[in-house]
Amino acid sequence: MAHGIPFGALRSFETSDGSEGRFVSIESLEENGACSIQDMPYTIRILLEAALRRCDGHLITEDDVLRIASWKPGCDRAEIPYRPSRVLLQDFTGVPAVVDIAAMRDAIVEMGGDPSKVNPQVPVDLVIDHSIQVDASGLIPDALELNLEHEYRRNMERYSFLKWGQSSFDNFRAVPPGRGIVHQVNLEWIATVAREEEGLWLPDSLVGTDSHTTMINGLGVLGWGVGGIEAEAVMLGQPIY
Image 1 (cartoon, one colour):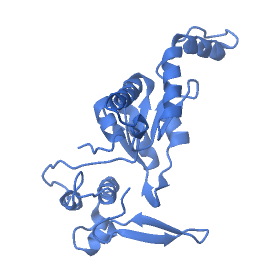
Image 2: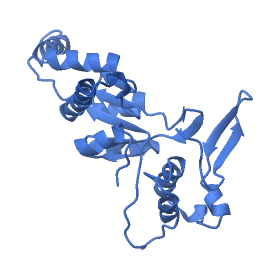
Image 3: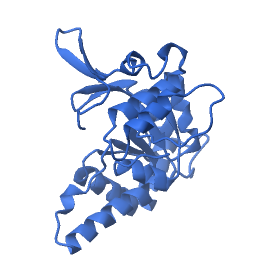
Image 4: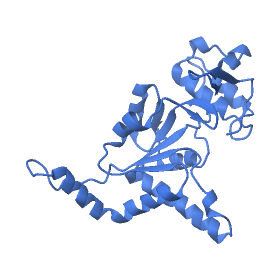
């Protein structure tokens, strides 16, 4: 992440242990007369901070930042770039995305390049929860263990591939079966609300390959569902619009 952030927005603060943290302040835009933060909905503030932090003059420009900052109720619709801080996948739609990244590595090898350079550009979590089938239920002893055993046997090739992906790709984690539904895992274990990334503190935000991704909004984390192509774009460092 480059730190050539415009509008004098890079600020610092003192942490509880006395060390210094840095963050991107959208108040710098208010100081420059571009907007009124007090009147801005929280979701717009998150989009604005993300655009300001990722402003590189190419994928996201200062004009894009000012366009978001000028938001008002009833304003004209406009296309804006958004680069969330992470991606959430489930196995049904996530496996094809990981296959595509692996295929890119194969293509790099054919061109004589270094395949290890092809990695997700943001943290990606894939939660395996869409493959279970109920073979044992009711009063059958050890029903959960039996169902998990059958699931692993049926999906061993896919799960072995995902395990390889976790060990081979940077920024990629796979949560194995039996840990819970993807959205509950996201709420209880993955979401951070805020985190440090390359020396900057930033709000947690995400896109996920499921329409129920918006459950995470209950924690104040901006997130919504997208298709596989949009998720892959974010994984490769591209904004969605």
